[in-house]
Length: 109
Image 1 (cartoon, rainbow, N blue to C red):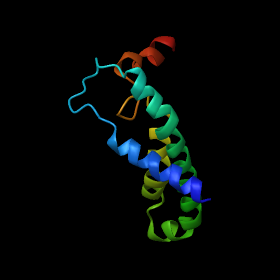
Image 2 (spheres, rainbow, N blue to C red; image 1 turned 180 degrees about the vertical axis):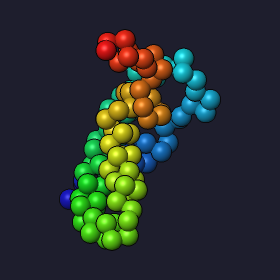
Image 3 (tube, rainbow, N blue to C red; image 1 turned 180 degrees about the horizontal axis):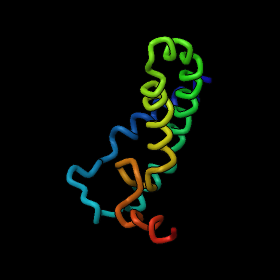
Image 4 (spheres, rainbow, N blue to C red; image 1 turned 120 degrees about the horizontal axis):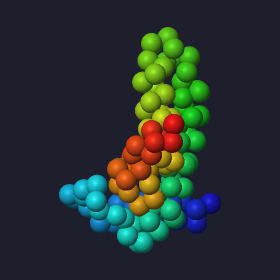
């Protein structure tokens, strides 16, 4: 268990120390290193975060329902982490699909 905590801590530290693009435009493509770090570190952490968010959302659902903020709780605890994990392109630093993929769904229909 101690080794798992050490690996998680090292992964989080490595993720925060990786250089990010300050002024990335839509024409910038992620390089292989960014894709590797994303696949090896960020995506597994995102999947765990999404799973924890689902558990927290279900556990707090009665309180959210009484408070009238079920939609906000779902967005922050489940939707946002899931979008970062499963919709963001590999190596990209923004959620959502890259510009080069936008509009393809409209052409298919």
